[in-house]
Length: 107
Image 1 (cartoon, helix red, strand yellow):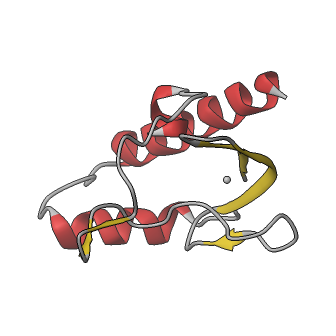
Image 2 (image 1 turned 180 degrees about the vertical axis):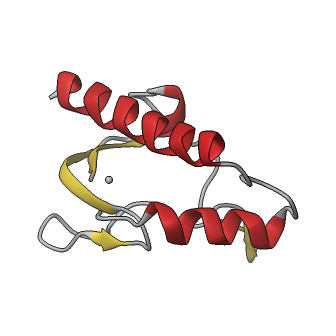
C-alpha cells in the first residue's frame, strides 16, 4: 500500500489483539536497532513516540534486490497465460524502471 499508493501515513485503528483475538498483524519492527526483514523489503523504525491514546511510529521502507524473471515466474504460477510476449516482458522492465526512478526522486 505504501509504495503502490505513495502513502506517507498509515492509521491503524485497532489494537494488535483485542479480547484474545488477533486484529492486526505487526507490520513494523519492534525496536529502533533491528529492522523487520521481509521477502522484498526491509522496514526500519526511525523513531517512535508513545502518547496517552496512541503511538506514533516513523517507518522507512527499503525496495531489496529483486529478479524480474522470478517475479514473472511467480505471476505465471498464479495466472496462467500471464506475460507471454516479448513486449509484455519489456513492459515489466519499463514499469520497474519508472518505479525506481520515482523512488529516487522522493529521497
